[in-house]
Length: 296
Image 1 (tube, rainbow, N blue to C red):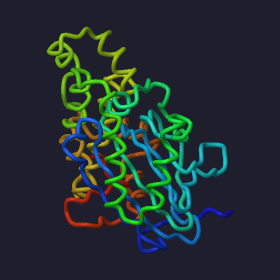
Image 2: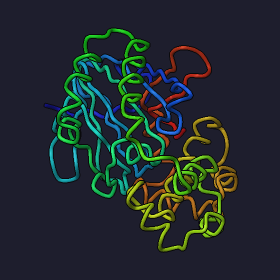
Image 3: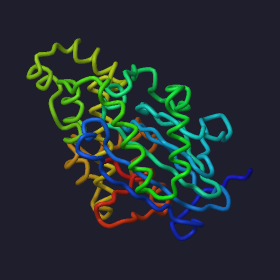
């Protein structure tokens, strides 16, 4: 199957429609958001290079699967549902063909570990079939979501399913709080100071962070800072990279550029240009965020 890169929004066959909502308050310490993407492509006309990112999520594919390509290999189809951990390095591409309809449950930094008791180091840089992770509980959820036709119905089904796990979930603790602060501040907090306040040694924090997030707190801070910079550029596309670097807490534009090369394999402007070639729009009003392009 031929692969053709999109050069500009005007040349894309279709825009990707994005929806996102926040979970019920009772689930917000576990779930960050629920999201949906819909699009219709006649051929692979959009390829997205995946950057290193802090997102952890479960995603369901109801029509055509996404196509994934690693360096040196061809495209392969995703399973019908996947559990994705933190991505620590660039190197994979996503391709889109046919009718795309996905439902995504995005988790708080430690949400998957708390809810299911998972050791998150096992899921770094992985997109594993969800049915292989939770073999007994997922088929009924997949079937119920597939039968539903609206985003609202799927959110209600997913929330009820997650609520059923809450009684066995680990309680919120100081490591969860530190991880949430790193996301909230875009990595602009002192990890050692947070550890001191929580009464944790550096070794204790690192061990527990690896277990519940998948990477070290220092590296996770780098991922959240870079995500914050990309989100800022998406909100303010006319701003200079020097301004974005300063606002995101980098020493200078050169520092941001080095991080971009490490975390997405190219300069920030090159990566942003590639993302601009993917035409997307939010559905449902100004509170709906673009899950495909932004860190939230």
